Structure formats: structure tokens, C-alpha cells
Image (cartoon, rainbow, N blue to C red; front, side, top):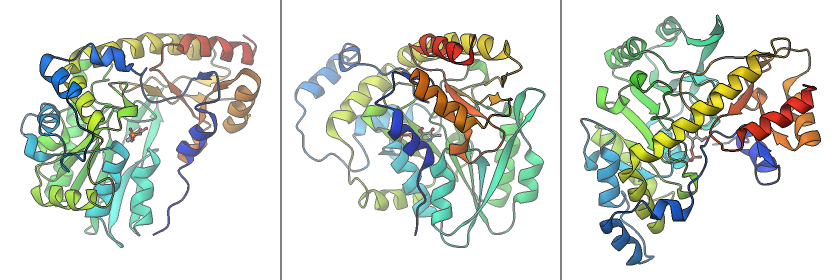
Length: 370
Ligand SMILES: Cc1ncc(COP(=O)(O)O)c(C=O)c1O
């Protein structure tokens, strides 16, 4: 099994901790320890102060699994396995896929969603998001055509990184019906859930809708807590969950003890934390929309519907990777070129979740000459 370099992660590794302005991250502004601990109830404070730094329960702290289960209507703590989010993707693919399986995955995608099945020897079919009349679309007919008797898993990510695409309820229902008819797995990366720009458009969790769906949840994006490294896999498929648990013994064994308690505190304040993150995203979205759509000779603005990222286009002849490189060299501002997603069209990712967004935008304005 051979893994190719994770282009996005390598790009971030080069700049994330050295440039002054990140105009591309997908996570929202992080909470400090103090801010989070101030939200703790009496039970959590006691757990925190009396915490011993030993190994923890492999499936996750019982209270953490209980809090995570509240994301779902039909699931309980026993249907949750705590993992770090990236580890969750790895464990699920590693457990359920094998050489020769066919897998259909959105394109563009967070690279591990495509790369892990590919490295396992699966035939990976990209299901492309396309631009129609200034916004992102997904063609269900493409999926109908791409499904074969060898298809073992469909992999989606709504709200979507990097485009901010979110299907409507009807499209999502049809997608569920297509996988359910064939009894194949649906891996649904829901790590940007709670960041729907119009909360009315929030989709049900896939794990609630179909028993062979696996929902990936986590605290990295909509809670602004990626440093905890806490997420979870949720499914009603007991056999699959058992396989994931076997895998965890070979990856992390158990999750970090302090992170688990901090994660319980965050989940008990889910509405408060995620509402503040969404408010920041919406404020930055307004700035980004005004900035990019008022410069049509340079950019095509593509409105996101959910999540903390947008994926507009540079419409000049300049290759977007060169544009981003000159921007970082001259202004110390990082934008992420669409090339890291191996996606054509001269797109770049804008991250909408950070407090200093307007400062980065002002430097971008200087760079392009107003
Ligand atoms: C769609 C998606 N899934 C999973 C992850 C992994 O999350 P983490 O970095 O917290 O492991 C990311 C991170 O950017 C992501 O965008």
C-alpha cells in the first residue's frame, strides 16, 4: 500500500506557522483553554481537576460518546467510536474496503477521502462538482451511471470542503435511496455540520437515515477546536463499528485523556460555540462576496451555501499557483491554490472562519493593485 503525498497538508505545513495572514484555513477561529474551561459545568470541572493521565477507554469516554450521540436522532452512545477525524477516515476505509472494490467519491475532495481508497487498490471514480450559473452543482445522474455491481462505497462530504456546496433535502434523499437500493456503504464526512449558512437547510445526519451509512463528526471545524484532535465515527451498522474498533488498537489505541474532557465541555455548549463560529463565517462571507464579485475581470465568485470555505476562480491567464506564490512572497498572505485538490479551473480556496479575515483581504487588495 503506497500513499502519495497529501498535497494540502504539505502546503499548509510550509506556511501555516510562518505567514502572517492565513486567508485559506478551513477551521474556524480557535477557542483558548480559558474560554473553553469557563463554559464547563460542575461535573466537567470535577472531571478536569481530578483527571489522571492514564490510558482512556478505547471506544471513548462514556460521557463523550453520550454527548456525540446527541447529534443523531436514532443513535445512542453505543453507536459511536471516538477517534481523531483524520484517523476516522483512515479506519473506516481500511476496515471496509479492499483491492478491486469500486468507490465513488466527490471531486474535489479532502485528499484522504480519495487517496486512502486508491492506496488500498480500489478503483476510485470521481464524482465532479460543476459550476452552473455561478454556483456549485452535483449531478445525481452521474452517480446513477457510475454505480456498478462492484461499487462498495459512495463517499460524500456535506457541507463540502472546499466549495461550500450543500445539496437540498430532495437531492440528499435521492442519493440515500440510490445507495440503499444497492445496499452499499455511504461514508458521509459531516465535519462541517452546524455551519449551514441557512440553518433551515441543514441535512439530517446520514447515519440517522440509512443503517449502512457512516457519519464522521468532529470538533475541528464548527467548534474551532482542531487541537483537541477529537472526532467520532457514528453508525448503526454494528459489524462495521466493530471493525473500526479493531483498527483503533493499531492506530491510537485510545484518545487523549485531557482532550476527551475538553471535548465533553465543548459538546455540552454545542449551540453557543457553533453559533458564534457561524456568525463569524457569515460576517466574513459578506466581505468576501463584496470583494471578489466586485472584481469580475480578476475573479469569479462562487457562493458557498455551507461550511467555512469558498472556492472561487482566478479568471486571468495567470496560473493560480503562481498567483498564490507571489501573494505569499510579497504580502505574507496565504491562499490555497486549487491545484492541491488536483482540480482544474484555476480555483483557490478562501477560509471564512478567522477573526483577522479583513486584514488578509486588505493585503490581497494591495497585492492586486486595488
Ligand atoms: C472534509 C474534511 N474531513 C476531515 C478532515 C480532517 O479533520 P482533522 O484535520 O481535524 O483531522 C478535514 C480537515 O480539513 C476535512 O476538511
